[in-house]
Image (cartoon, rainbow, N blue to C red):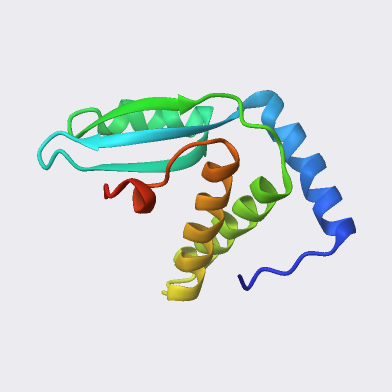
Length: 124
C-alpha cells in the first residue's frame, strides 16, 4: 500500500516493537457484538485487549485467537498504519487511505498468523 519504509527503518521499528512486546505482547483478538452477533478481528497489544475487555464487556465478548505474535515486517507496517490512523484522528482528519492501509496490514498480519480475516470468512 502507501506506507514506504526502508530496511533501516524496518530494523529500528522492529527493535521498538521488541521493546514494547516485553511489557505488553501483541495478540489477535475477536470482538463479538452481544446485540448484533457480528464480529470483528483485530491486532492489538495485551494491555489494550484487557482495557477493551474491561470497558466494553457490556456490549462485546472479547477473545484472544492468537497470542504472542512474532515481530515481523508485516507487524511493523501494521504498527505504522495504526500510528498513522491515531495521528489522523488526533488531528481531526479523516482519510480513507489511512483506514485502508490499516485494514491492509491488519489482514497481512492475520494471514501470516493463519487467522482468516473478517473479509475472507464473510463476517463483519
